[in-house]
Image (cartoon, rainbow, N blue to C red; front, side, top):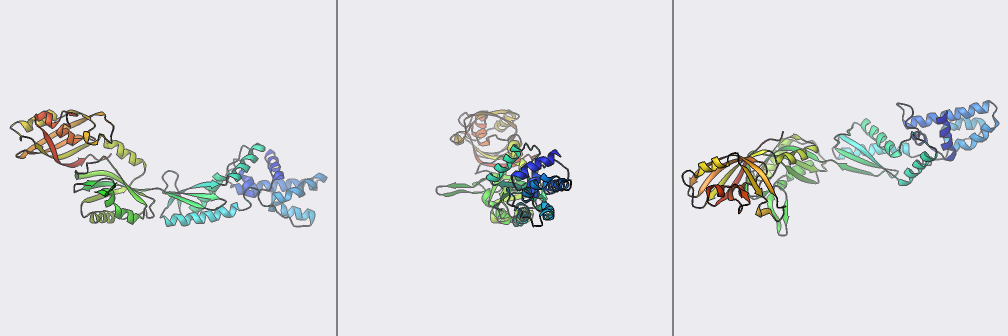
Length: 427
């Protein structure tokens, strides 16, 4: 009966609806809603006073009559029996009697919003008026109620259960969206998680950047992100971001097996896409400069994996190189022999030193294969660790990269064209 007397203390001070009263005793009982708890407690209180009245306790009636309006409809029958009058129920001092209807209406609104954004997996967040939260906490502290839960938790849980009953799935691990419900205003805010596609891209032309590259004179280069505009349109998203496993220079092509990449569409309204249709639209819009092959959908955690593994994966490059003075017998064999398995020490290249910290890095060249093309020109296949600056491996970058083609040949070498042929797949 201690629990009942605690509830009596609370109700003597203020009217509470069944749900708001039950929430102060949320940890007691199993498989019940707070609505059930509040109603059950009130019924026991009414039975307690009826028992006292029937037992001849004259003080029971004096206690019950002013308490009955705070209890609510559960007390109406006994009140009428004892007084012959109808009970005027006071509105709940926390929610104003609106919480029950609010939960149903909010669930309907949330479901409608999820349909607009094509979302099936969701979670619910809640914002509650600070005044209500303060009063609720004051009641719990004043009456030493250690089994209560916040109205904010109840709103999240109960709206979520109702939305699930409308055919959606609550997903606390990888939801497609969070809908924040505000009580008592009923306002909704939806935070739609990005749609992330995993695949590979090919860049068949030069002077194409990975990311959108605006400048004072307009867009500097056509970009892969611009080529993804058809995906943005088909998904009805707000923006698109490319997360690639490494990057090639703007003047280098990405050929061969393509580069592993994730494509993120922010706030999409369409989540189920025909990926082959997307691939075709991208290639047509870029006039064949950019192509994608999508393997399926990915999660946010994969972005970090792609970024981190890009630096440790091996890559194969094809370089067109000019050697001042041309090459002589034995030059190409010396290149292949001296650079095979070589550890390359590279300072940050001069060409990017204004935007990157000047550090020394160790990279690996696994193998080099070269052939003469006539005159000063040679073509080389270079297999190396991710993150190696290949142009500087060839030129030496004024001694900032060692060993280099220039140092090994004893002649100035320069990369004229560079293509990436292989990026080891992400595991």
